[in-house]
Length: 392
Ligand SMILES: Cc1cc2nc3c(=O)[nH]c(=O)nc-3n(C[C@H](O)[C@H](O)[C@H](O)COP(=O)(O)OP(=O)(O)OC[C@H]3O[C@@H](n4cnc5c(N)ncnc54)[C@H](O)[C@@H]3O)c2cc1C
Image (cartoon, rainbow, N blue to C red; front, side, top):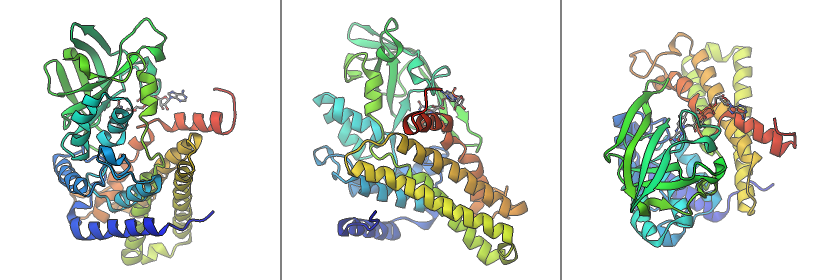
C-alpha cells in the first residue's frame, strides 16, 4: 500500500496548517468536546471559528460545489478531521454539516435545499439530532415519539433523550413515528424542526460525568410544525436515516485526539518527570500506547481508502470507531496514572498538569464509546458482518 499523499493533498494540508498557525489563537486550542456544547465559553469559540472556517468553504468541504461545498475527496475530509482533532480546533464539526445537509441534498425538496443548505454552510444555524429516546437507543427503530398530520400541520408528542446541544440549537433534525401500525422500521419519518424554542418544546439539561452540560432531554407536547417539514418519503425515515450517515466514517478524530493526548504526556514526562520516564514498566506502557495509536490511525486510513475506491465500509468503520474511542480512553487512563497525585487535578486547579486535560479526558472519553453506536454494538457488527458469525 502506498501511504504517500498526492501533491494536491499535500498542498491542501499545508494550506490548512498555515491557516491554523495564523488564525487560531493558542488559547482557543483547548476545546476537547467535538461540538463545543459543554460550556458557554467553548460554544462561543466554536461559533466564532465555525464562521471563519465557513468563509474558506472548509466547514462543508465534502459537499458538492452547487450546494456550497468544495467537492473535497474522502481523503481531504479525513486530513481535515485529523488535523482539527489534533489541534483541538473549535467549531470544525457540526451535525448540520455532518448529516442534516447531506440528507437534504439527497432527499429534500428544492425549497428545503434553498432554505437550509446555505445557512448550514454559512454556519448560521445550529442543529441538534433528535433520534434517541429513553426506550430507543441501540434499538432506534423502537422510537415512540409520534407525528400526526392535522390539516396543514404535523403535531408532535413524545420525549427524546441525550440530545447533544439542544440548548444551543435553533434547528432540530427529528425522527418520529408516523405509522404506529406498521412494522417498526417502516413507520418512521424524518422532520425538520424550524424553531427549537417553539411552544410545547421543553428542554431539560442532563449533566454528563465530566460535569458539562452537553446533552439534554427534550419533551414535545402538541408541538405544531408545518406539513412541509417532512423530509423525504413518509414512513421511509428509517432508510433515510441510514442514508444520512456521516460522509467520512473513518473515526480519525478519535485516533488523532489520542495521539495529541499522548504527545502532551510524553513531553511532560521528558521535561518534568525524567526519573519516571526511565522506569521500564512506564516505558513499556508508553511504547505499547504509541503502537496502538498507529494501529488506530491505520484502521481509520483503511476506511478512507475503501471509500476512495468506491466501496462502502461497514464492519471496517465499526472496527475503527470501536478501536479509536477505546484507545482514547486507554491513553487518558495512562495519563492520569502517570501523573500520579497530579493526575485527577482539573484545569481549574493551581497545581494542574497538562491543563488538567488527562483528568478531563479520563471522564469525557467514556461517552464516545456510547454515542453513535456503543462498543458492544460495534463488536456485534464486526462479529457478524466481518467474521460471518451468526446473529447473537
Ligand atoms: C455523549 C453522547 C451524545 C449523544 N448525543 C446524541 C444526540 O445528539 N442525539 C441522539 O439522538 N442521541 C444521542 N446520544 C445517544 C446515543 O446514540 C445512545 O446513547 C446510544 O445509541 C446507546 O443507546 P442507549 O443509551 O439507549 O443504550 P442501550 O441501547 O439501552 O444500551 C444499554 C447497554 O446495552 C448494550 N446493548 C444494547 N443492545 C445490545 C446488543 N444488541 N448487543 C449487545 N449489547 C447491547 C449497550 O451496548 C449498552 O451497554 C448520545 C449519547 C452520548 C453518550
